Length: 230
Image (cartoon, rainbow, N blue to C red; front, side):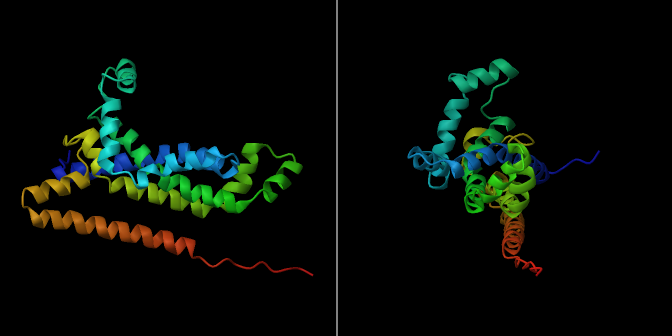
């Protein structure tokens, strides 16, 4: 069996965390974005502000309050410990839950914008053809907003990979459990191991650049005009 180095374990933990977080973000973010896109009441602005709060809130602030909530002294942490028998704070599960909160706007906002631009004409046409809500979503909405789904998933994944403040506050630095690439990079800098820090940093820069380039390329694909049959 191949034994991974500390950085290798950090890479595996990071990819596992980002993958699970993105999966749950798409499940949670899609109906939330749909709800906000169709919402017309004045409270919509307040809900949008709450969703977007991680964009402006210092990560350590969010991490601090999540750490308190995850501790056994408070209800979320108590419920988790009763159900699983394990402490939530400083665990891999805490990383995933915290990442969902922190990366939520990167998934919700692209999807909400796509749903708002889609309008209601196609949905009304589908309803006239007696298509159910789920049928209309998967046969009309999803194919027409596929690029936005890819963008949302990619941004959620990339943002989760780059997290530092939140994961450090709620997960600590446990090798093979909560130590991710951003923390590993910080450890190398603290130890004046700049060569290894350069390797991790440039790898993250290149991976982020490739991912963003792919997203922009996808969003700038020319729309093929349909021929009108006369």
